[in-house]
Length: 205
Image (tube, rainbow, N blue to C red; front, side, top):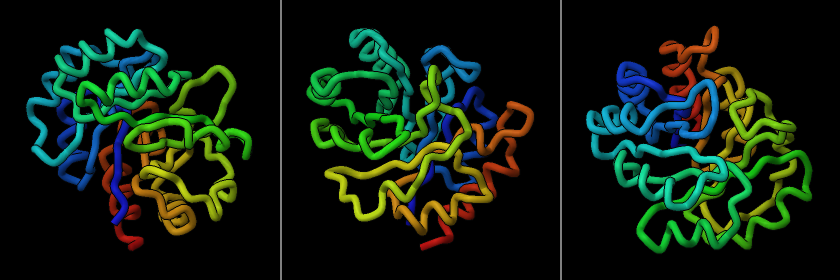
């Protein structure tokens, strides 16, 4: 069964909705974004999560020491690096015990060429939109992934919604799917869309 990460969580109430619906991981954005949260808020949310739901911190080209400090303070289970962080940066976090998800923005086959150089715990593929690190609500061409074998688990992101996630899971067969704007209405997380997204993602296999 595919795993589901609900990203852009900003409050305890939404976190509890996602957990009750069957989310496997929750994402907290520390980078500049309309969904940005403070370490203090995330620490409070993480404190009420059940033990098998993974809290993931999302960072974009942040100083390495800042990532270490925030991850430890908040009790994060994994860090998602969504910028231009090099392999050595990722390795430094893994060496001190953090699980690392490295995000890449895809616009064409050339963007898949250098993934093998990263020794991380999972690869996350999102859609390339100029000037935007993620959360764009746009899907890339899933056909680019046909026949591809990845050295670590693949997390599919970018433009996923309750309406298309089942097709995405069937076509790509990722380890996990990641959604943020696709479960929002009017810029806010919508409990009904969160529940429907998770249901449709998990019922495929």
